[in-house]
Length: 68
Image (tube, rainbow, N blue to C red; front, side):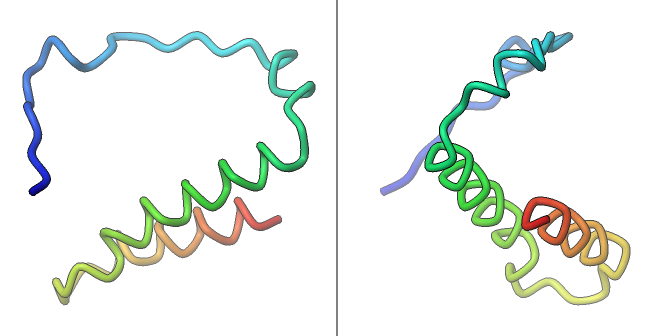
């Protein structure tokens, strides 16, 4: 059984990313990250809720950009 805890203190106020660190990631790790991203995006895309064209186009754009 999957469970979760949700509270405001778990959300970061800011995220700092050093782009130089992403250059050294291996091609395999990059591919794994893209697969993980697509999995999370498609969860909302295929959740069975109709009438969300804006969210659907955003999901499609995210997937296409990740694949590029």
